[in-house]
Image 1 (cartoon, rainbow, N blue to C red):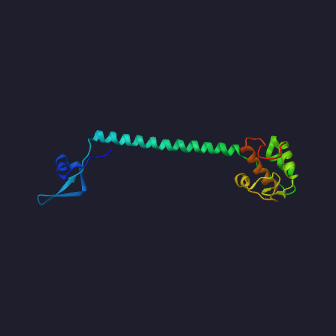
Image 2 (image 1 turned 120 degrees about the vertical axis):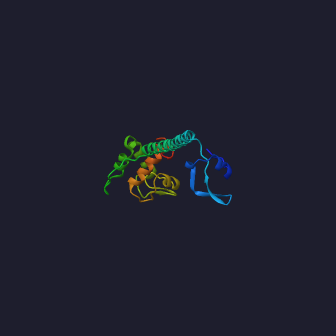
Image 3 (image 1 turned 90 degrees about the horizontal axis):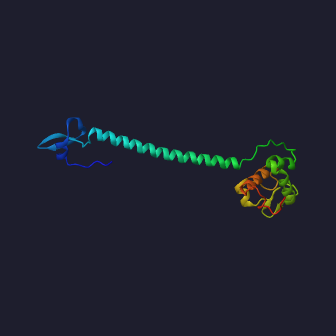
Length: 176
């Protein structure tokens, strides 16, 4: 709440010694007098402070709720796009990798990857590379890999793309 600015004479008339500010002086009649700052009645002052505190709490709770909602939404998105961690040894078979990443959709994923690249990690068809033949933009969004990258990297990127597309195979030209 804004306080009205008053002239020094008005302030002097209203002021009491308890309201004096030690750093403010006014020169009147050749003498230096303390200038009293305007104050509200103590009860009104307490009400103003209480209302200001309430408003600050409301503001804080508003932003706190927004932050919590955003964190929960991000957690749901991460959970939906989560790729199961699979320990991979260099000799792991491509089919086993696909099954471990796609889970229940493993057989469909193997059929798509077989049709797209014959399960070859070095397969290239223009901008489309690796076992799932993902294009440049899709690899940027869902997980970067190139021809010859480990099959696990390509499978995880393809799984993210698969989930983002609604768990159907519409982005791929080969269907299970």
